[in-house]
Length: 85
Image (cartoon, rainbow, N blue to C red; front, side):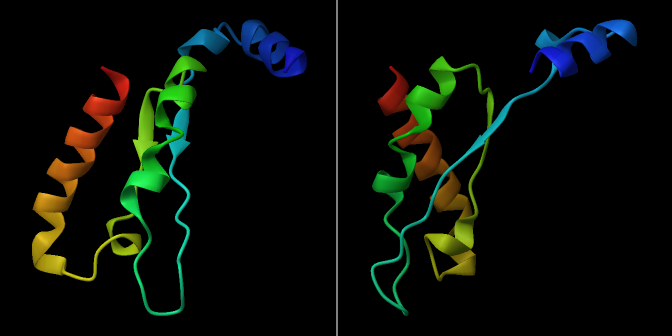
């Protein structure tokens, strides 16, 4: 990490300006089922405490309904807000 910090400083940049992107880890119970969203979101508060500010969630890991992606995204936000309140 020090090498990156030094290299960035030499280029006139600050490592604190890097956007840290976290993610979820989908665990599939079998070959045909979607992953459990609640389980996948559990690490988000810890990642936020480590400085992650942006998170990637792949809807197709958690829903088979392409028409329900909007509702799915709202559910992700509701759950993350609840976990981090």
